Length: 201
Image (tube, rainbow, N blue to C red; front, side, top):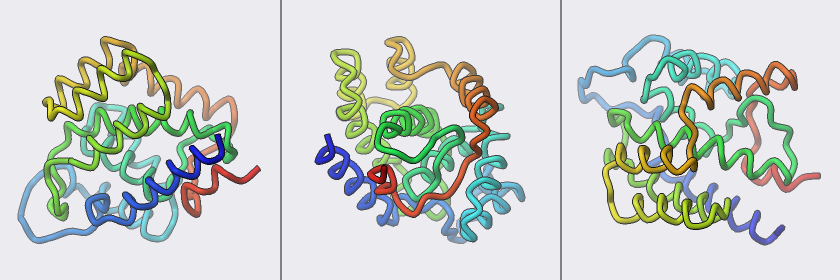
């Protein structure tokens, strides 16, 4: 199990180091979308100063209301260093972390591309979702969803499939669970040094 965690953590670090996963580096493309909102700029600044709690809360307020760009930003921030609310950093939490990312990435894939992205096709989401589905070992249903992303299926189609099979929850159900867990545990979102923190006892 430890070797599998090491492999996945290394994969996460490699993806996080790629320019494909940095939604906070802007270019002057003049595109109008949620990325241009002052709140998104505030959240990006919070990420830059390692205030993941503030960044999560800002993005979450939009994600909760259906904003795909905010959901994308939360997924990308998780690959960088953000730990969602309610998670204690230990190896047994890794599957929970995977499910958070899987949900946010599947919905975030519907976002308009960020002007600073080197690859606006969200290829990294396709690849990362496949890795995490394999690690979660969800059987035939997980394999069907992974194949949808692998084959280049439309993100909306893959999301609809994932929800219909119960691999990804409806977002309103996910949101209720996130907020309930945060209330019950008292653990807010935080910054982790890197995904290897899950290996610490």
